Length: 481
Image (tube, rainbow, N blue to C red):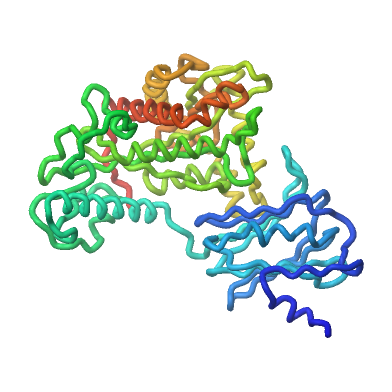
């Protein structure tokens, strides 16, 4: 007895129909990929020819159905099920079956209401034709809310830690008072706080554990000339705190691997590892008594368009924006780290201009839906220029960073270079792009994979950030959320 097409679509995660009558003619599937993230999940079908697709969306239960024409062999889609993870925040299951001659229907069952985008990408870099499904949650995560949630979690952990040390119950220890002119602090203050004992306890204010020799966190928290934040006098009772927010931007991600070293190392992987180490150090550090908090434009392996990275930093009202990359060149000889700031009047060198052009092409490789009206707005926003003051502050930040990075390794350039990097164009945030090393150099590729070098680099970058803020205190925030 044969099953109807309706029953086939209802069975399992994937239905494969075999036999000559189920083989479509035309394109061949080269690869399939799934990139899950809270921001959105991307599904990509790569083929050796253009795939035509027609889509329709069903709200109850939420699912996206796409009829794909021109697929040569259905088993090429088999890997989609294997790549789907149960913890994908957006996709519950995937089903595929022959819907008509030369037409395959792909059904994506969803965990929540989704705004789907389905589009084609032309061949670029190492990719052939790509059919892309971007699944954006209707209730998209808000960067500021995410930052608040992490901050609240840290405060809870600090309160619990202090309670253990003081022999108190965790819910008897208060969180610190927050400042009214700090949007993040104000939003935190609106949350319901438990009753507590006199005297706020916050990260950096809780009784400190003695640093362990060789512990890189103790080194990372060091403020130049003042010792680690744990050893500094805590903020005075009742003192207003200004939370300093540093946006960390690990370059590339998802469909865009960035540069690839001779040993196969992907730039997107090592810069994410370095960013995570720097994030942990920032979150443990205070500058002039004020706590710092890191916000990451991506904390997993997924693609983020250039201007979205900038918009995320603006949304959380970041005080700094630091984009992390791993340089590459046509030959393996170049080496050393470098720091770039924006230039609106041409690049400071031919190499800087070449580097900016390469990094600005990330949207093409990662796959930007240029037909989307929102993405059109992003493309137009890329032409916005930063202010002279922002560029001057960026140069100060870059110089402070170089001064500490040179203590752990070679510099490619002894001064901050400038070029028209799209990711540095936030007009209100000092922004730099750090090329951590040349991944195209075999020796530096090994260093980028070495946890010790990653730790040393994170320490150096933190010291540069602290040195910058020591001389350039962040201004009070006055914009409304």
